[in-house]
Image 1 (tube, rainbow over the protein chains, first blue to last red):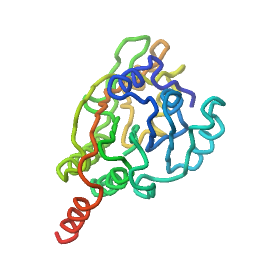
Image 2 (image 1 turned 30 degrees about the horizontal axis):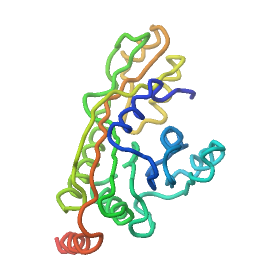
Image 3 (image 1 turned 135 degrees about the horizontal axis):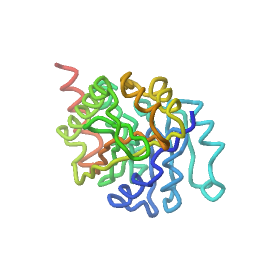
Length: 98
Length: 149
């Protein structure tokens, strides 16, 4: 089913009021197909999106914009299995995910 | 996700965050989502079951605040739309993909009689937390306390 989530950009406006993503190492939990990732990733240092649904990760990896390819990556992983090194991120973003 | 699972996940997130790092959480909140056709509100989705899930999640998040892992700093509440070109797409998407949510029959009939665009308007809350304290001792103590209960 085709639908457009947040056509008005309310999410990214709210995010930018609460956080400055500039040069931040971001962990996005529940990154889905990257819908929100593309909206904030440009100013970050890096983004790791974790998502338990393998099909969504396949879609996200196939749709990474060229200009974000070096800073954005995705893994098939649930938050409860997160195994990242200690203190390796500046921001963790739980996007409709817990 | 059960509150204990939320706490477990957030402890892992806390460990991965640098000291004084930020946790952002975005999730739906009450009141229930409404459906609009051409900007006119037609009624609310039945989200009672889903809101029980949200309450469990919020309880888990609160537990991590109580444990001293995170401190709440700021919160914003706002609306997010999801836009559909047809009424049938909206009804089908909710029925097939939205856990714990359904379209009441009367609302489905009203939507199908309405004019495009068809929107679901959800109220959401975005919260910013600060990662607090050490990444080891407090968590270990909390885990031991939970295990001994």
